[in-house]
Length: 111
Length: 355
Image (cartoon, rainbow over all chains, first blue to last red; front, top):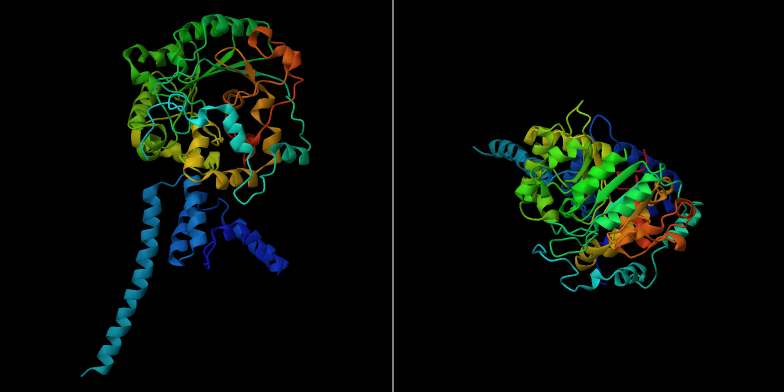
């Protein structure tokens, strides 16, 4: 097998993080399960948000998991790609909005 | 990937051979060890050997002939399949039903059951027996030929419950699974069914849709998907229906071929094994259903039928020798494909089994 930092098989071992800290692990997974239950947002809407965030944080495990989850929950391809664009827009916007800070600094330093 | 136009049998594929399929399902994983056996999972749940709870449904497969060659089809049905039930075998089914009041529902499937030349005669005779009649209609058959255009009226005249496959509310995933142009024709057929009252509140005419995933993933929550299907089909096409049944694809025939050839086989098996639910296992449909093949042989379900796993009741393996007492005390035949029916909220021809 290629020697890489990311191994797809590790996704299925996510639960193993509880081995070294059972109490915190249990609390995290209970919380995680609660978050993704149908509530004010549907399970499908939550899966689409998770897919967008997965791209923003560039987590390959999360992209794998939430692409599958979105398909299972009936999201269509357009919705999924729009969710990724939302992530891209926020990440791009977050970089660009700092342009105002740059412009302020230019103003401060310039005659 | 190009859409198949021929059945696996016509292509002389290994996956047309039930023995080969069972071998694939039993083989070790790439890493050398084996998936847990379905029977051992049942044992852990106190359900082994699996026995019927009492047969109330007779599912009759009237033939493998179909106007479609869907990529996931466990029957390997298609226009090139000629195996269809004769009127004589249908008569044997009618004789059994007439003397078996415990069986209250008859579920007709195929192929496209409507393509059997004796289909209408059979439905008319079944309706005289006062049984609930379900027909698994693929929708496009209604538009396939002018002689089928009146099927909605025919179904209505015999108070048939129509159950139809529609894997998605958009063309992309529907056509990827069922063939180019199937979505558009399915929509027209649904509108024709609605026009005679099917799926319309208060009409008493039941129109249920079947969702099964177009790929190597499991179905999501039936309640949530039903709400989304209802919203999209109503707003996009003015279509209404009663229930959405979510069915998990079982690794049999074309779907098994797809899983293996796309490299998804092991991960899919792992998914359905990881999702094993003892509550779903207790409610599997083989416990209240007997499946009849086109040639009259009896099976625990339509999937076992396609794997040539006949019922384990030697004195009653054919409709001509149907004895309910023997059949209701049989051991149900199991293999690794059964994990598909016990995953998550369960899967049956009537959708989820865990309510």
